[in-house]
Length: 152
Image (cartoon, rainbow, N blue to C red; front, side):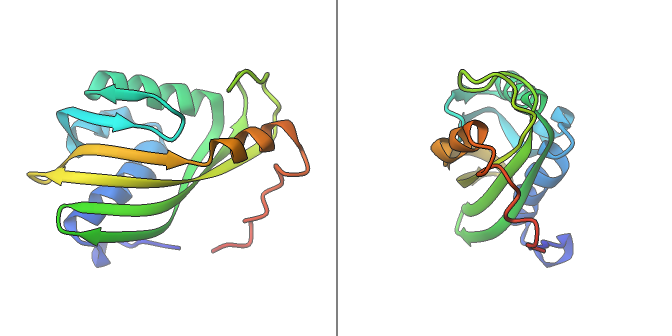
């Protein structure tokens, strides 16, 4: 699904920028434009973090582990100061992850983030991710095929 900047609310535009501009390019320089300095983050891969520096390290770890890391925003729903979404994350497994040696396989998982805004910036981000699906795709090459390749 394509989310053009002209059709999005300011909060949804920040979510789009977070995934498509920051994550997809590992551009940690955008973090201060998206998050409060002491924001809280609970990521789909497990850690709970506070602040820009901890989050930047997490972005580097994920994007170093998964070459060509990409986020596909499938849906966004906004209510008051929150935006929830369904997102597919994927890349080529190039570094150890969850105790598994690099497989060289294209792997993916879905996540459900909830962004809470304050003063135009994200104050809290909580993400639930299908980690067991990711681990299964790392372990089983039959499951790692990009079955979503036809999604526009």
